[in-house]
Length: 290
Image 1 (spheres, rainbow, N blue to C red):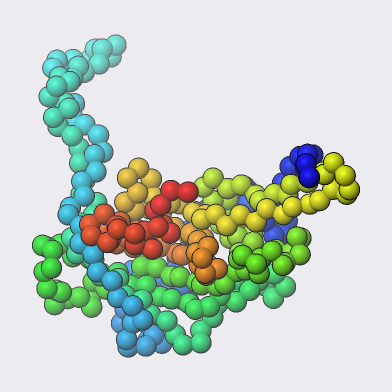
Image 2: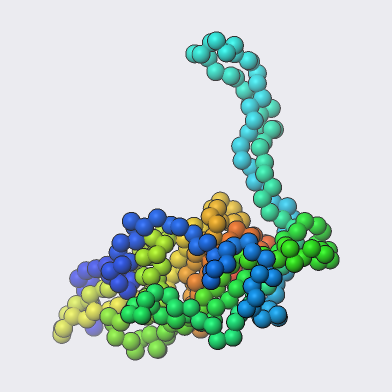
């Protein structure tokens, strides 16, 4: 049977609030549950003693070029305002302004309080996210495989959060009514309402098709993109915000998550991927291109 495309209409992800996201300025989360980024692990008294997971990484020192210092060829007197300083371009190119941004050894530890969930949104439109995972990062300079420093407890600081939830995929998704938003749709709408539109944001749509014979059919287009608020720029080393926000979904399991990630957590993921652990799932969620 032949089908003819009649039109493509945009539809908000889950609620009218999502359509207003372009007017919202992104404000990074400051932390979670009364704790701010950078607090030491010892300040979190409700967390269990043992982490649910620990990861390590090492990265050689990363140098970022910030600009160049002009090496003067001719110095123009200050009283001559119509002239400008002249630079020796070959010498200037050899005098780059650089800044060391990251490197050394990293340890990420994750903790979860048994049974703890987090209600995202209100009673009517929100949903409970579970499990809730607290992340702590430690970083110190030194050679690969160097022993953990004696002041590790002072270095191990609050650097991120993961809020997990399940959303239908595959056959379960196909059995949903076309106009029923999934948990992923609802979470995306709430994130857009709270943080504004993420980079490259596009609403999902509906396509109306008209067969040669019979009634037209409406086909819903669920798209489970990874959305990022204040992602890393340039080489992808780290976010420039106090924390980024990422919405990501594993299409094979339907497990989705909201990630609050500080710059040091981005560095850890970058180090894992680039220096020995290619395919790291955290790197894929935070850094990988669409």
